[in-house]
Length: 315
Image (cartoon, rainbow, N blue to C red):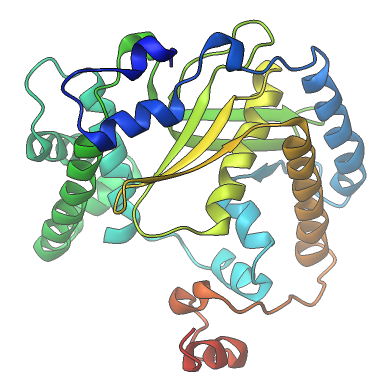
């Protein structure tokens, strides 16, 4: 996003103006990173991870997503239990996909933007898709579909209310897939970003990575964006300039500038996750129970003493 010329836009409400003020930066305000930063980060990761890959069968690749990373560092008992279960779509899971598709459509919509029209279009697109979400939508109950439409419409309407129209000059991209392959493509970091704005110029950072969330702040949201920043650095050799979680319910940002220290801390977190993964899956180490908000929707909540104690305390 561009500088002060972009910050004063007539017709924007205060929340929309706040988005520009928060995300915009002049060229001089954008940091320049070392030319060899991406090379050194890749080397540090590969050197530390390579020994652990010997424990993984040679015909298997290790994919690490933000969800997997968060689960490994959380309650390991819950993580192992969920690995045994087949993934199932539900309203609260599908909502994000529908809203993000509506945001993507809004970027290129040539007619007047109406929230309900774009949500219905997003639902229709997924219903026609041959993927797992499309299959679920085709078979879900009318109650689930109505609830999904209602919740998606609420979130998307808040987005339209709080965000300015995204100009093409800002290079907006929705639902951007990213991937970094290391160790002869045996170790793969992957993710899909809700929204990116801007681009790098040489080694001058320019991209902003945004996660759109309903609900309230969670420390895991910060870690998710740092993981995306690491993948971006490995992909193109230049980190993003800024990471920002935007909470639609409260119209508030949780921003963080990207630094070399932040990236190295994320490298350490990824290496630690690989070590824990190998210990749990291949060395059969005893998993650790860790209580927290995740206990509310854990599949083991009814039988786990640690989780029951947490829930009974009403934390």
